[in-house]
Amino acid sequence: MERILVSACLLGLRCRYSGERKADERVLGLLKRQDVVLIPVCPEQLGGLPTPREPAERRDGGVWNRVGQDVTEQFFQGAREALKMAQLYGCGQAILKERSPSCGSGQIYDGSFRGKVICGDGVTAELLKKNGITVTGESKADQI
Image (cartoon, rainbow, N blue to C red):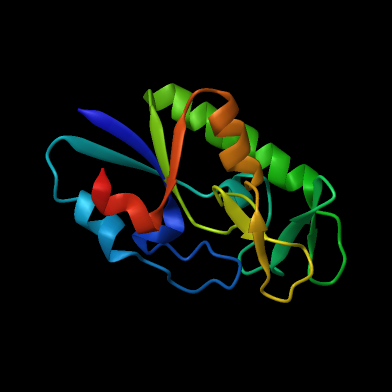
């Protein structure tokens, strides 16, 4: 049985910055499979950030929220905890929230809070990849 780390927000947990639900039907569909176990994780909460919280974006190697507060350490702490979870459960892959400053893989917002997307990884996605875990976004969950 394959264990997959998954952004908890994609399962409908209210852990997003806004506190709203963001369940993804493709990810929820994986719950019906007998050969897959999903391990939910929210790196931002694991890093000590509250819910709801100000939206944040990566820039210049760090992470800042919309009001200018440096939340880099919380994001990196959450990434380390998410990696521990992946290792504890033997997850070889992760399905993470696209464009997130924590979880985005391949594309993230540019740090201007204007909705501009650039190439890059969120803090958690980057750390998981560096440790040999395959990271995909929710738009490709139905390909697993």
